[in-house]
Length: 83
Image (cartoon, rainbow, N blue to C red; front, side):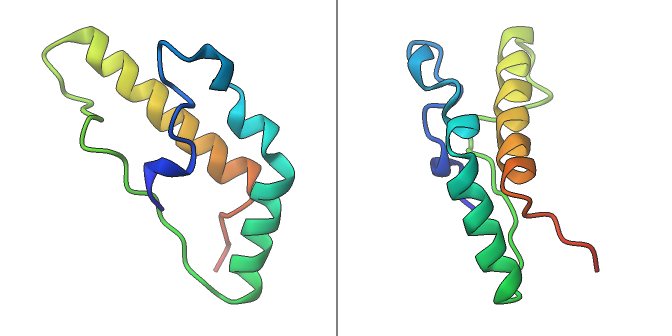
């Protein structure tokens, strides 16, 4: 899954989009149900700007924020499957 599924969820200059994952709960759940029904394995691929070992602590903080947002997509969409 591209990080573009919620492109502005963590954009610092666009706080109006910071709740876009929660606001898309129904759509994410439908997407997750479709993937499970069709036995499609989903995985995330963070953008090239996510850097957990950045020398700049602010960049590390932003990277954690971005990954947390992707995790919420996963949880909200109930995409995790148990096998």
